[in-house]
Length: 205
Ligand SMILES: Cc1cc2nc3c(=O)[nH]c(=O)nc-3n(C[C@H](O)[C@H](O)[C@H](O)COP(=O)(O)O)c2cc1C
Image (tube, rainbow, N blue to C red; front, side, top):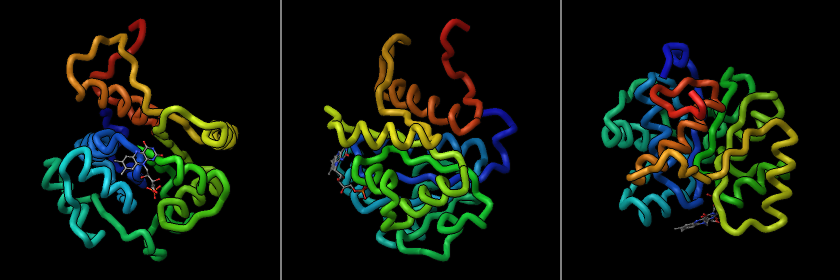
């Protein structure tokens, strides 16, 4: 990632949609680039991490950052994690000066609560803050098929300026490994966070 990404501060949330690998890879790539990350992991995301990747996060939310730093081999400095009821954390307020957030993957439940302003935990509150402060909010929703309710929520959020990047990897780069599919999606998220992923395959270039 380009040097311009350094000093950037981001809120990164994982929720209980399938595709925990996308969220972990995003945290890894941001960590490698030295981006300050405020991590929020929903209870359902913990279940999915166990189911899909055999990863059991520490019970105490504040220990998750250290655990992931070790596991992903990224610097622990700049990586912080918070409980979902920590209303005194930076993510809870627009005055924190954090202007961007990614929710990867994003469940239909979390997306619905953001779309309706019914914020009930710190992930939803932080997204609510992004919307009211006109910050950058990137969601990677994942479900199939999509109901009209899901589609309505996506349209509503897109019309509010939210970047909707569904977990729909392309195959035109002829991926051979799951990691390539994951990186395809994570690259798209990084671009929409205004970061420049190194080595990203660009169409026509
Ligand atoms: C293994 C597993 C996979 C799931 N996959 C999805 C999914 O792809 N999309 C989705 O919206 N919900 C999915 N769910 C259901 C959500 O986890 C559930 O609706 C949960 O309440 C979401 O909570 P959260 O938004 O607070 O993370 C999955 C659950 C499990 C256990």
